[in-house]
Amino acid sequence: MSFLDLENKNILVTGVANKKSVAWHIAKTLEEEGANVIYSVRSEDRKKSLEKLLADKTVFVCDVEKEEEVERLKTQVAGHSKVLHGLVHSIAFANYSEGMKPFH
Image (cartoon, rainbow, N blue to C red):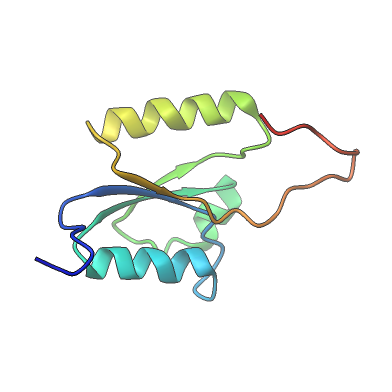
C-alpha cells in the first residue's frame, strides 16, 4: 500500500494545459500512486494538442463556462467509472472578454 492509498481510486483531473502545468504533475503523481486518472480539458483543440502527452488516457472535453458541458462531463464520468473518489480542480483561466459571468 502506498502512503497516499490511491491504488485503483478514480480521480478526475481538470486543467491540464501542457507538460508544465500543475494539473499534469499532479496527475502523474496520482498515476504513480496507482490511481486511475480521468482527464478533462477545455476544448477539442486542447485535447488534440495533448494527444502525445495523454496517449491511451481517458480524456473528456468540458468548457466549464458552459453549463451543458459540465452536465455532459458528469454523464461521461459516471459512464466511465462507477465511483469517482476524487477531483483535482486546476482550471486556471476563464475568458471574461464579454464581462463577468457568475459561477454556479
